[in-house]
Image (cartoon, rainbow, N blue to C red; front, side, top):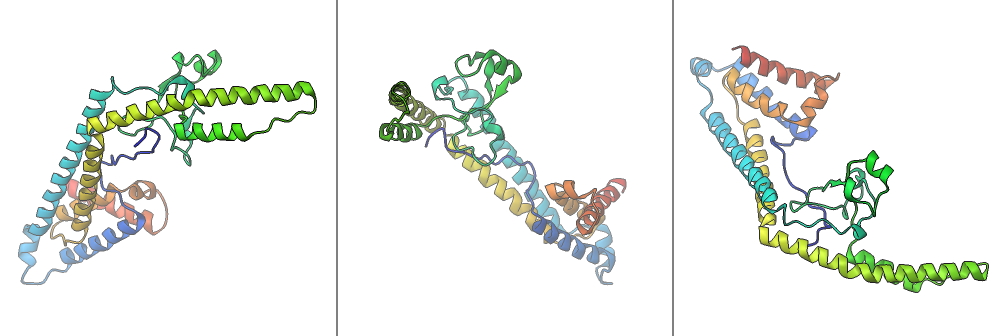
Length: 280
């Protein structure tokens, strides 16, 4: 594993839902409304006073899963703090383009911390990489980092390059530039390799990969617990509020509640259920 491989860390506090998942939850909530609105005579009294025990159990499981997920995330933050003083910054000679945090389609070579998150550099000390005006304009940024594989490819390319020039002077200039580039990449290959080996060693020693796997698994567990609740009928307004609050945690809810159309109307219905339960 190298420092240049993009690593994603699952960090959502609430279950992530797509539009399709939200609609599935809405359908389940609608079924629950039907249970409350038209109970059978035999169950009418019980339904008006007691919540579905299966729903309550599922909600308890969701809360436990959320707590487990939070514990895993807290453990990751602790690990990052504990190993921060050992984690090396990439040598300045290896730094490539700045603003890697804005390169949404190409972040594989962005500099990262031990957890795989983009590492924002203090630019005030990067005197070789940035001039004074650039450092003053942008106090922090994330850089792309030259990998030893990319350096080897660049070296091979320059070694195959045949300098040309319209005059002897320009030809000599191009030949000198080629030699400079060959020397540069021959020097940077071992530097990049040493950096990658050290960061890989620290990741292995810290156990960060196992912890990130734990975060991913607990996040999936939260998602499954929330999905299970959407399929269990609610018998009371409080039960509906449990289901509604899960739907309200979806980014779809936040983006649609002010909009027109079915999803906007549904988001406002979800909010109304939450508000009603709060007043009750």
